[in-house]
Image (cartoon, rainbow, N blue to C red):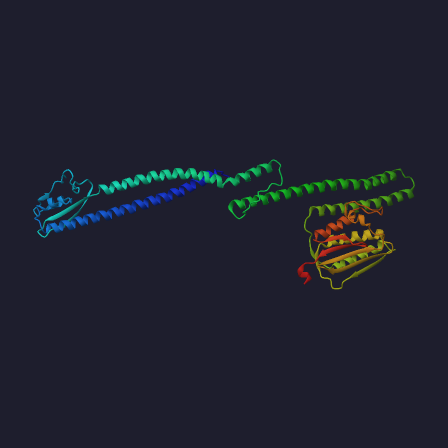
Length: 433
């Protein structure tokens, strides 16, 4: 990228425009004055010729040049035989004014044929016209050069003042490059040329700082996730290793069967934990969910049917609107969120779990409640933290955070309303109508 001096370019371009304008004015003045002087010279010749014609009617041809010279009109007469009659220029006496009759070259002339066949010629000098034009040309040249020099100096100063805000942009950029954050130009008139540059620069800084914050938050989430995953996986992996080592030492078949059962149970718990950790990692990436038109009431019914065999001592009740619209959601994600809510309710319910589905306030709301002890008011925010557990009922501490993450990925939310968890999924305006 070429980076010439903007101030110099502005000054030179402005000076070039000024030079063009001045030269055009100079040419116009020169041509106008030249035309005016030519007209005046023609009028002088016409006047002199008129005077000469009137005298020619009164005097013989031989006396006509002298009489005209006395009047200050240089003239000559040529006879039909070719003889030329001229008069010497008049020499004025002291104190006497006589029009000049001496001709200074170059000259112009006007001819007329007299009645007797003689040719009368009157003259006028162009020396004054040419001298005037040369003087004008010299003055124009000197004036134009002086104007160019003064204009270039002034334009350099004006361009430096006009482009001073660019220095502020450079200063802000250098301070930002050294680590300063939050610096903004904040133009007072963002629609001007420099205002648009400053506004674009501020937007760029906003985007860069937002990207840096997102990267830092992503790094922090990754570090926290790896630390939590290592901590959570350490216990089941240790148990499985201990179980396998005990199997090698066990001699009794019944003990080995018991240890195999324990190993299968720990393997299942580890598999569920890994699946939950993978879901958390996908939610942390923040990608949009894959949406398809889905019958939410059907999902709730299937998940309730899936949960019932795992808690035969509990009564499951499903209440739902019969005319719920299809909602574009990530069916797999919502199914997993609802499964986590049902598993959580199954661990805490005494006799009954109630699932209610309804359309309300522009969203499909799934409420999962139980008749268990409930969540203390002080812990209703902490239960959505990762790996948080208020009891020893066997949960991984990821079910509720995953369910809330799925809801928020859809633009909704998951909250605890006292005796139930309520999952809200927004309904598009077209589906509502």
